[in-house]
Amino acid sequence: MTITVKRDGVTTSTRTPFTGRLVVRRGSDRVAVFPREGTLGIRVQGPQGPPGPAGGSTGGAATRYVHTQSVPAKTWVVTHNLGCHPAVDCEDAVGNVILGAVRYLDMNNLTVDFHMFITGIVNCV
Image 1 (spheres, rainbow, N blue to C red):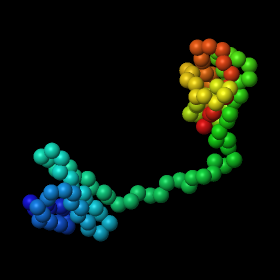
Image 2: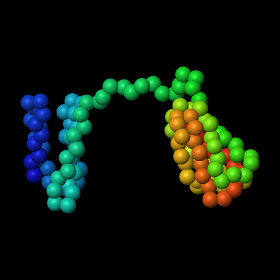
Image 3: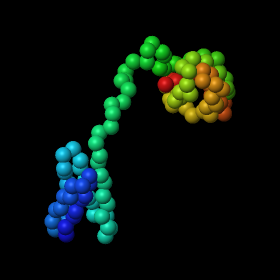
Image 4: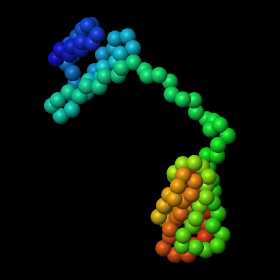
């Protein structure tokens, strides 16, 4: 089998018995060809994109909040002040993960509803 790749006016050809994966490189470009059930799948990797934003610092803003529910209740009202809809996980008083229905009231407040009166914590991240 002969595989020909043409990009930006440059043609690269390779002859191979093609029983597996073939990678053709030209400069920083890479083309990978994979057989898939009688057809060929082709993946082209172009140039690397621009760098993303720096991570790590949030400029002093909180990134996590832990709410403690010490009075048994079916509905826990949580004021986290994170300015977002955080991911939420809940634990009972002994550390078991419990499932509740989370309802976001706004960017700083949410409620978690349970089927029984219970105490525990809510982790907002």
